[in-house]
Image 1 (spheres, helix red, strand yellow):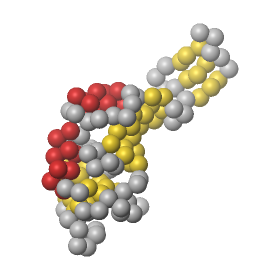
Image 2: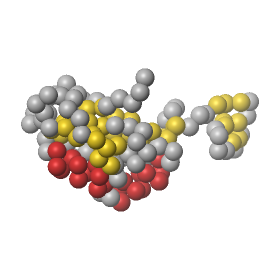
Image 3: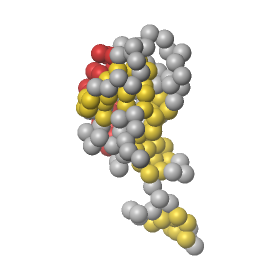
Image 4: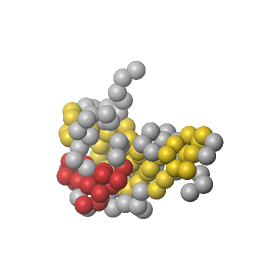
Length: 139
């Protein structure tokens, strides 16, 4: 299998392009016509690990508009601070969960996203470990 496309419904394609390129530092990676009759544009992070198809649709009641897109990052705090400084509105500060560190935000069109820094936790006797540090269970 190869790279796939995740549709993101927006009501103004030009405004969406400004958000993704200006605030999230994504690049316009290619033009595709995946959904006939609708204006679309593909954007990706600089490392091209993800391809979002921005789909201009006058109606927000589209089948794809209720998904949450999880963007994997190697540093959630760094990206949270960078995006917040650029004007992205987060639902909360980064929080730990069983998978790692996550921060949720939305775009101007109501689509939901999560920055996720995966952390591989494991419990061994008196320590909770991940690849970066150990925490004593008795501390």
